[in-house]
Image (cartoon, rainbow, N blue to C red):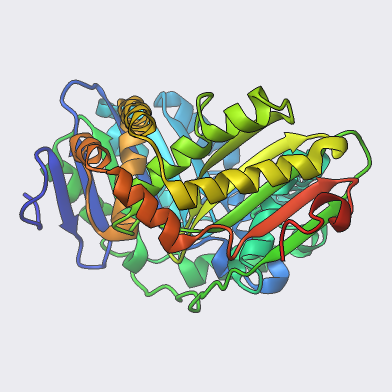
Length: 426
C-alpha cells in the first residue's frame, strides 16, 4: 500500500487525511526501526524578541504530558529500550526514536502524548532554561563555535536565518511558559508534519497505527514569512585577545535542490574536504599557516553556500586569508584536474555509503530529501549522481557562482580589519 507510483524498491508513502505525510524505507536485514516527526517549527518561526524559543521548546516537550511527568516519561522510554531525542535547526524541528522493531507501537504511543498533550510544566521550566543558558555560555567561550554563528549571521543579515539557534542570555531569560504554549498552538499541527521511518516494519500496520493515533490531530500551522537572503560583500570582526585568529568565509553556492549540487559537492571536496585538498596542501602543508582548515557546503531551502574555516595565528592571519582567496580564484578560473575529480568522487561515494548504513541515517536522509525536493534518493542514485559529475560542470559551477563576489568574511581574534583584510577585498 503506497499512495505514490514509481517509488524506489522498499520505499513507501502515504498521506493521512489530516495532512501527515508518512514515508518509509524497509530494511529487511535489520531488527530495529528509527522514526522521526519533522515539523516547520524552528528558528525562523520564533518571534524576534524570543530567540532560542524553539530550542528551549525541544527540551520542554519531554518534560511532561497530561498523563505522565518527566520522570514517568523517561521510565517509559527506558522500559522499552528506546533511544529518543529532539533537534532544532534554522528551518525544521524533529523528535525521533530508535527502537527494536517489536516496540514500535508502544513507543509511538509515547510520541502521541508528547506531541499532542504536552503540559510544559512550570517546575521544569527553570531547570531546562538553565541547561540552555549553560549551552550559550559554552558557545560563547568557544571561538570555534561562535565563528560559525558570526559568519552565518552576517551572510543572512536582515533575515530570521541570521539568528543564533540557542538564542541569547537575554532572550532565553525572557521566555515564559505562555510563549511555549503559544508556539505549540501556532506551529504543531499535522499539515506540515512529515513522519519518516527506516528499518524492518509492516507498512500497512504503520499506516493504520498512525491513522488511529493521530486522526484527531487537526489544525493548520502558521507559515513563516517569505525569506529572501541577499548576501553581499561583508566583513564581520569580533575582537578577542589571545594567540588565535579564527576565520570563516561564506559565499552563495548551489543548494540541495540545485541541479549542480553534486558538482558543487565535488568542488568543495577538492577545495577543502580532506587532507589532499588544495587548501590543506597550500595553506597548511606548504606554508604552515594554519592548524586546521576545511571547506564544505552549507545552506537551506532558500540558498546554498560554500563555507571555509581556518584556524590560524594573528601573525599569519592576513597571509592565510590571501592564500585562501587565491585558491578560490584558481578554482574559478582553471577548474579541477581529472585526478582531483576521481579522488573527490571516490571520497564522496565512500562517505555516502558509510553515512547510509544505519536506520537513523536513512531516516534523516528521507526527511531531508522529501522536505527539500519531495523526492526520495537511494544510495545507488546518489552514487550515480556523483559519478556523473564532470570537470566542465565543476568549472561551470565555480564561474556561475564566482564565490569571491559576494563573499562574507568573519573573524574572531585580535586583528583589525586593516590588519586582516588590508586590500584583499573591496
